[in-house]
Image (cartoon, rainbow, N blue to C red; front, side, top):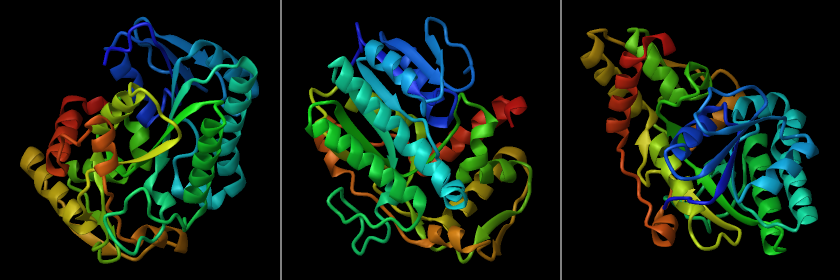
Length: 321
């Protein structure tokens, strides 16, 4: 998987996932085009396009240049989507509408890999959830992501694009985007609290299951799927395939952080802050058999190992945290 003679565009290149994708792509033979509303940290040999993906004109440039597009831009906050549904809808759907129109006009069909979310499923009666499970999102964030998936799938079936959708579990771990990304990443944020010896606030009893997946594994899934012969609008879960209760996750973080720093944190139950946050309380684990069958991808980093790597990163880069 070399990406030789391939131009890869990464939207949201200054963000959490986009920065991680960009830095890994820079180690391949790809020609890298980083797309961001603000200047991303420079990468040697990469081109940068400062643009808002809600604007049509930027997609004309991207489609003309890119063979593969990793689309990681747009709203990534459940709570921001609940507070401003119109803004979330615009940042999620408008870019893909422009992308499809630009590709149709250019008569190119780039490979497009979309960073979606497992929140499109809603409440799943039987876990782990396969891609064939019903989709009944519980909040605007999941609904908007599902609409984006459907838009890409339609464009792919029409031959306008060659799309692949990645439904991501709970991604965690360090990113070249820096500390700012942690503010919307619960596990990263809690780990930083534990490193300071602060209390770890646990909403409710914390017994709801989550499927945590380390960011390096997510990046590898993008690169691996980006190189398969055909996308065809297929959808893949990208997760660990194992459920961990949030309570167990927090206690593990507290234990590993204390081992690294000598500071002791207390996991403290607190009430759910609002009804939107309570939507986070349903169990979820993903079936990852489809992606394993399609390209051989399997997660390589366990949750515990990922927390150790995150702690090591924080220790080594104190100015970042």
